[in-house]
Length: 204
Image (cartoon, rainbow, N blue to C red):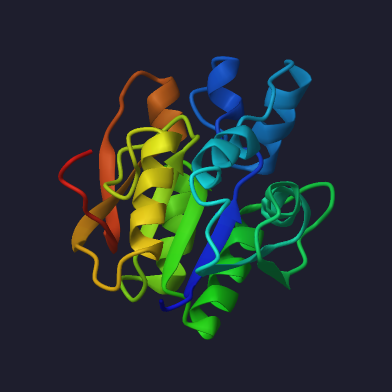
C-alpha cells in the first residue's frame, strides 16, 4: 500500500474567544484577552480525537510544526512524523500557519489536516489554493467554510479513509469568513475568500 504524506497544522488558540463571549480569536490581542478571561485551549484535544482514528496506521507519515502546533500530539500518539517548521514556543500566530503551509506545499504532501476555524482555513488556503486537498477539524468560533468535518471524529474517519484508499472523492468548496468586528456588532456577513479542495464522503 502507498504511504500517504499528511500535513498537520494545529492553531493552538482556535476557539479561545468563543468560550468567553469574544465571538472569535483573530489577532494576538484577542488571544491574550481570551486567556486573561480564563479561556482554555481546545484545539489539541479535538485533534487528539481525530488522529486517534489513525494511530494504528503504518501507511502514513505526518509532517508538522513543532510543539503545540502538531509535534507534541504526534509524539503522544506515537505517530510517525517529521517536524518541518519550528514555531514559537510561547505565542504562535497566523504567520506560523502560513509558513508551515508553505513547507507542506514544497513537500507536496497528499493532504493537509488542520485544527482551527475560518481564519486558519484562510491562512492555509492563501498558500496552497486548490493544489492540495485539506480537511478541517472544527475548533474555531467561525466555521462557515466547506472544508470542515462535522466533528473531530468525522474528521478522523475521513483522514483514515484517505490513507487507506488509493483513490478518494475530492470536491471543490468555498473558503468563507466573517469580520469579527461585524460579528460582535451582531451584523454577521460572510465573505468569499477563495476555493479549496476537500474530502468527500457522502456517508457522513
